[in-house]
Length: 146
Image (cartoon, rainbow, N blue to C red; front, side, top):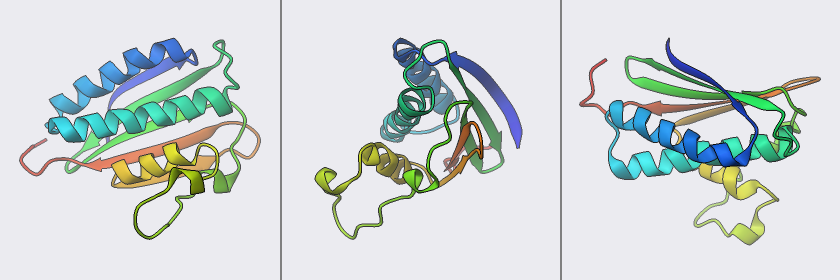
């Protein structure tokens, strides 16, 4: 997989707008349609927000890293932090049949559910002592050639 872009970002919520704009531009360049772009931007925003709140403890002095990779047929966005490892079950998708009721989700569960809905494949790897890594993959639109 070819690395296209890597950013280290201060864990300051004010920078999330910059992240959203960058993700939007990257996805448009990759050939995604507007509705799909909006959904993915929201999913990445949720992942970054979770990293800022939970792993980085809301401290703007911490950082997280976003890496964008592409290959024939796939686009991957990976978020890595060096904060507190999340409990392994905190990123498990609630497999509820039918519509999801936000009241039934655990705290933060709506963002996790959204990330799983938006991306074609999601892998979460908490560190044993420090850090977390979330890899979110999308199939590229069929009409786009790498």
